[in-house]
Image (tube, rainbow, N blue to C red; front, side, top):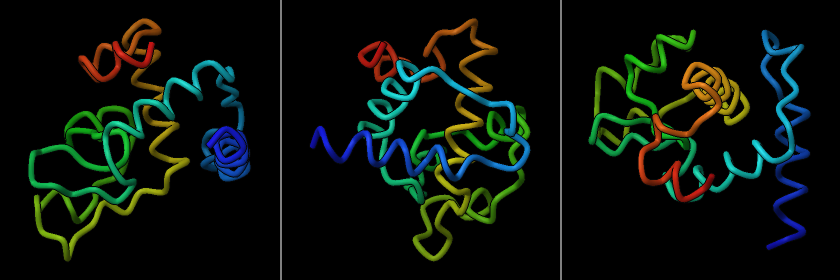
Length: 116
């Protein structure tokens, strides 16, 4: 598991979204984000609970941090419509939300608190 985590984080670092050219989150943040993701679900999650992706964004929150509308938003819980944002994009949007929250994981509730 320990070897997989740094390798996975390195792969995500190589796949940063184009608009995030100046995005350089600290390693500590990436580890916390990985913890949140592991507790939240697959990157393509559309479980029907109103949250989407590996960081479990609400559609309105996703759009508020600059994410584009996804077909999954119109079809909550329908496995034919997985959330399609790339993992690196989801992490970038999570970073923006984390910064808006004052450098805290409060938007992720108890999961965020347990990973801080």
